[in-house]
Length: 385
Image 1 (cartoon, one colour):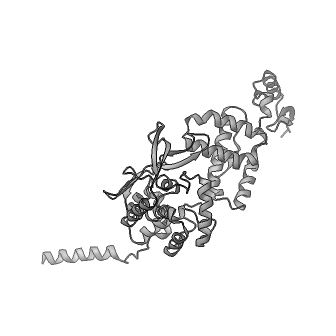
Image 2 (image 1 turned 60 degrees about the vertical axis):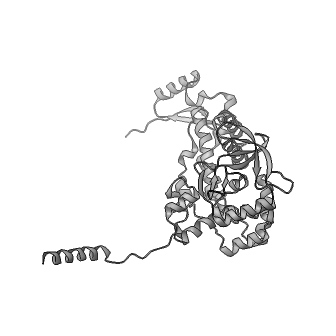
Image 3 (image 1 turned 90 degrees about the vertical axis):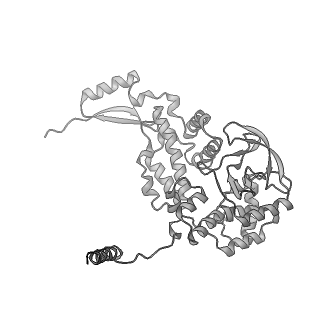
């Protein structure tokens, strides 16, 4: 078989470097040369200024052009994840120079550093979204994230809690938390409230309906310096608003809390209905100066209480109280659907997958079906006789 001649043509690769493009037929090389000179070949379509566009430059254009359709929480999360987790690694790189190997090396390094797999999944999805948009904008020929098999990289990813406090460990925490904030811990451990839901709880039937014994978890306290003057009230995590039974013990704790620490009326913007409305919110929990808590302020206080109670630094968060609530229900034989309802999970699957190791294992009697059929057959024989 006659060996074909290989023709070379100079092109510019994704990193802006000159490379030779090889053709087996002269007609293909001439055709590409004509398209390149006309500016319609893929490598020639991108303007010179855009060839040197960095990931950060494009990432900011991507974010600002899309955030108009995002909820405030999404804006805050995306901006933070780009700034803290993607720009330090990819920010100064040319957009066209990011390769599959670049992404995999970053993934491997972050996993080795102990980055939670659930967080890393969010960062990869964000990187994928930005690079996918760059493909659509014809700034890069393909998305390097397309070659990342995330399910394989993050094999073993689970929602299961890494640590759940025992009854004694919850009591140890309650012993060291100042009386002013003890009821917030009860909302976490006794009602399964998340951190923002507890801090957003207000003294009114809107949230705590003592008369009917109901707890309406319909809002959370949020903080974003650039929006609404900083603090505002929003809906809980997507799909998790709901009304649950108010535990009598927690109800009594809240009554005593209000008597000892009267709610502080705070002027806040409420966006739970979609349209921002400014109203006075009688918050159950504020700082000693009567101000709402920022995430950072609460975290600083929590770290001291956690350490004093002997809780682990890595997983001893406020959310561990919610895990205690769920696992206590399960080990006391609450039905799965009831646990889902009280946790306000969107689906039963989430509840079952998260707490699969806590569901009691029941022994199935052997030969059960055969015994039932045999008994039925025996009854039939007796009836005929």
